[in-house]
Each structure stands twice: as C-alpha cells, then as structure tokens.
Image (cartoon, rainbow, N blue to C red; front, side, top):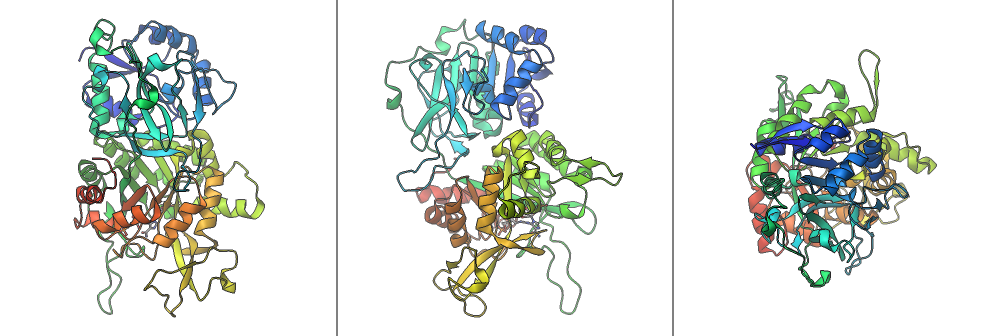
Length: 560
Ligand code: 1PR
C-alpha cells in the first residue's frame, strides 16, 4: 500500500460500497474534512450522490470548492464517480444557474425520453449495464475488454463536443444518444458509471487508477493523445438486459432471519391434512445467498423484508446487518424494501421516511423499494391531483434522486367477462392470453393493487399506481403479480406490457419465472430491460449463469 485515499463524502447516499471496494483493493481510506486536507491529499475519490445543486451547495457550504479546483488544475490524482464526474463541467440542466467546478467545457443535460425506432419510449433514468467505447488508449482501461459492461444509473449526462474532446476517454450510447462515460486528462479521471457497483470490471478500473495515482503525468504512454477521428466513428454500445435475484427475508418461527419464498405470497409450508399451517419456508441465509448470486452473475440483488409492516423499521437491526455484510463482498447494486415509511418508535419519537431510508443507504443499499406507503401516496395524488411533497416517496426521491427509489407493486388479477365490464370501470382491462381463463370462464382481467403483502386490496389498479408513482418521483417500478408468484408458469406478460406502456421509467418484471425460456419470453415480447426471479434460483433449479447462457443463445444481450 503506497498511500491513503482521501474520500470526499458529503453524506448524501451510499458510499459504503465504495469504501468497501477501495479497502478490498488494499488501500486505506481517510475522510476529507477540510480544504487543507484536499490540498494535501495524495489521491481523492469523489462519489457524487444526490442532485447536482445539492452536491455543489454541499461543497460550497463546506468551503471546499476553491480547494478542489486548485487540486484539479494542478493535475493531482482524482477519481470522480457519477455526479462526481458531472460536477467537473460548467453546469447542469438538473439545477440551472448553479455553476459546476468548470474544469471541463460544456454543460450536463437530461437524456431525452424520446421515441425510439420501434416506437417505445427511451426510459429515463438509464438504469443498468452498458459498455464503454474508448476514443484513446489509457492504462486505466488496461483490464477492460470490449465485452465488459459497467453499471450506470443516471438521468443526466455530459455530451461530447470538440471543446471537451481532449478530456474524453470513453463514449457510451443510450438509445441514439451518445454521451461521455469516462474522462481522463493526466491524473484526473472520472466515470459516469459506478465502478464500485460494476462487479470485477469496475474494481479493475479503480485498481488501475489507484495503483498508478500520481504517476500518470510522468508516464507519457499512459494516455495517448486523442485521435482526430470523428466522435461518431467509434463503436456503439448498448444497454443490456438485467437478471435480478430477489430475496424475500423474514424471521422464521425460531426468530432467525431467513430467506423464504411464497406461493402466491403464502410463505408457510402447506398444512398436513387436518393439521395446522406449516412452518415458514427456509431457503437459506440472506448474506450467503446474496454472495452466491453475485458470484453467479446476478446484475442486482433485491432484499425484501416481507413482514416489516408488523415491526418498527428502525429496530430492524438484523436487516441492516445483512446489508452491511453483503456490501462487503458484493459489488453490484443492492435494493432493500419493506417498511420504508415514516415511523413512530415505542418512545413516541417520529422518524421521517428520510431517516429510515438514510439508515438503509448507510448500511449499503443503493436503492430503496417502497410498497404499501407508495399506494397511500398514489391514492391521495389520484384523488386530488396535487403533489404535496410530503409523501415518503416524494421526500426520498427529492433528496436522493429518482434513481434511488423503486416502487414495488403487488397486484392481483380480477377476472371480468368483458372489456367494458361495469365492475371494472376506470381500470385497464385486457384480454387474457390464448388458453387462459378466469374461474368462471372469464376472458378478461384487470390488476387490483394490494398492500401489506397482498393481505388488503385497494380501489386502484396497477397501471394507475405505476403512473402515479412515476409522477411522484419513482425512478423504477418493480412489478410483481400475486397470481404468478411462485407458480413457475412464466411472467404475467399482459400486465407487464400494460405497465411498460403506461410509464417512461424502467420496469422490472417479477413473479412466475420457472425456466430459462421465461426470461427470453418476457424480454422478447415486452421489450422490458430487467427480469427478477426468486424461487428457481433459491431451489437451485436454474442458475443465473444458465439464464445468461440461454439469453446469449437467443441473441439477447446481457452482462457476461
Ligand atoms: O409494503 O413497503 O412494507 O413492502 C413490502 C414488500 O414486501 C413489498 O415489496 C412486497 O412485494 C413484499 N412482500 C410482502 N409480502 C410478501 C410475501 O411474499 N408474502 N413478497 C412479499 C413479495 C414477491 C417477489 C418475488 C417474486 C418472484 N415477493 O419479490 O420475489 O414474485 O418470485 P418467483 O420468482 O419465485 O415467482 P412495504
């Protein structure tokens, strides 16, 4: 170990994974607390989190802005991540009028949520794994191959131009929009993607930077001069499909936290004839399963604390510990759900949804998933048309950014006889697939929203909830289906298509995967970019590798 890495952390999100990644690579971390420490640092890593305006305001409030500019202009070792890269530009459409550090010419703009060739909307934020197309050589990229993908999660991006060309190291394409995914000039490096969330490929990039920090300027071969080829001539990249493992976690009857799995949300073993309901199914330990799925190629892991509505979330120490331990060894995004809401503890103290989310982010979560509380907020919004800003969904989204908030929808099919069935007025009714029918031969259905793990139905449908959630600040929708859950018969394709068409944020298909073919089926027939499964992975029926192999055989791109 040659030096200590200074971390510029202004307290806005999950930097635990970054700390874990740097430690894993063998470096010691020192938290920067003053502008003097910035100027004296041997290397600085700046993981910007939150909004552009908040990041710049935090730097200003701490009196760090000028010191950071001086540090950067002196070509000292710097690695910016996501907003840490965007802050190097002159400004951002995200927070007009707020100047950036102004080291790189140009301003950051929002992705255009436009129509693509196939007529579908380009989903913003971009969430998932995409490639990088180098426009010059650099030792920072020495371990990256053309097949590698890295994890991006952002709504804003910096566009390449002749004015900033000498800073560009790699370009990436989202739909037909080409943007800067990495910059490098001398010792100053930054990435739009999250290397600490990009598996081994991301760790390799961080390692390449840290291992020669401060020596780049002296080593002329490390970064060649840019070629004069037009920026459009470099190979295109694409966002690939995600395969997500989901761990439903709860205490079993002995009080241990276990991964369980329901059949249509019933997580207890069937009762013996005439006997009482069986035990909670125990399919393994959360931390161990999370590691196994990471090693097996999961692009993301979701933890759902499925009984959190019965207990106080801030007393949920075991779940926090699961996240802390998992994030030590798992370098892909982690989402946590269950009990993300405002909460009054037994002493009468009120904890805001922001306090609750902050606890989970600090423990290692990258995103929080909101179920029941999002339904409450959506119902109010649908009734009044007013965004109060006070719902838990809005608060967390406004503070941490939409990309950090997933809304988990738990719908149940309601079968009806016709498209204009009186009982389904106001809801989206669709025809069932060939061969499907309701219990009384019905040929149509709509999807009623439930809360509390399917125990209570609400008077809105999944499409209304998805639309309202997007309006209130959800960056992603996790779309379960109680009827399909644990059945192994495939995803609810009409539901997924209906929700996918109703919103412009990314949608994760969930519930029903029973074979590798169900993944290609949902990806091909709905154009969705992410599919989640639980039971088949827990029971070792199908591995994530096998899913990816199958996708490759079908010509569907996914992370290798
Ligand atoms: O309402 O904000 O406290 O959140 C509670 C969260 O817990 C919600 O995200 C809700 O979906 C989840 N949840 C509550 N009860 C259950 C249950 O199963 N009894 N699990 C539950 C939801 C469904 C999926 C499952 C897929 C794939 N789990 O996540 O993993 O259906 O399963 P499969 O591949 O085996 O078919 P709040």
